[in-house]
Structure formats: structure tokens, C-alpha cells
View (cartoon, helix red, strand yellow):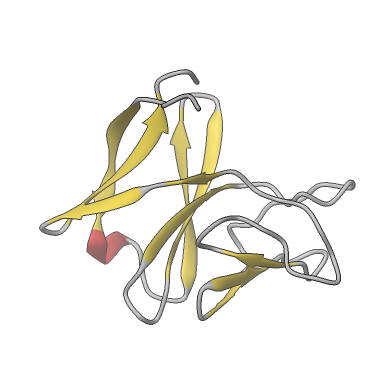
Length: 111
């Protein structure tokens, strides 16, 4: 098993991420969709649907700890990026941490 080191980057303040919506964050060449749930949890997923025809996730509908792809209606778990049955697929996830009102996102050093 390999361990991956993580560097954290500032992505904004909590008030910039309203509950139940996604917000686009760029990290180098990556586009990340950051979601704030009604329970106050924050999740970051690569801003792409795993569907073969592609699409973005940032405009998806958030319900609980899931986001629904706005184009294909795939149900994706925000916690692990896995598409729920009967569909399949996976989206890369990134950790988000809160320090006071400041938010940071973890990016693997190998990217």
C-alpha cells in the first residue's frame, strides 16, 4: 500500500459556499466542484461526470450527501465519489478542511 502526501490550498471562506449549491474551484489544470450540504458538510469532487458523454457536476442538485448530475441524473455520493446503482462509475474526490471560516482543499502532491 502506498501513502500519498497531500498539500492544502486555500479555496475561500465559508460564506462563499452557500448550502445546497456547488462552487467551481480551480487548482492548476483541475476543475473542482465544492459542495456545501444542508448539514454543513463540505465535499470536493472533480468537476466532471463519469458518464461517457461527459458533463460537469458543479450545477448538480445536492440532496443529503449526494449530488445528481445535471445532464445525466447520475446519483453520486459526495463522500466517496461513487455513482449509485443502477448506474456505475466514480469521480475523484478531494478532502476539504475548515480552519475557522477559511476553507482549504487537499491536492495530492503527485498531480
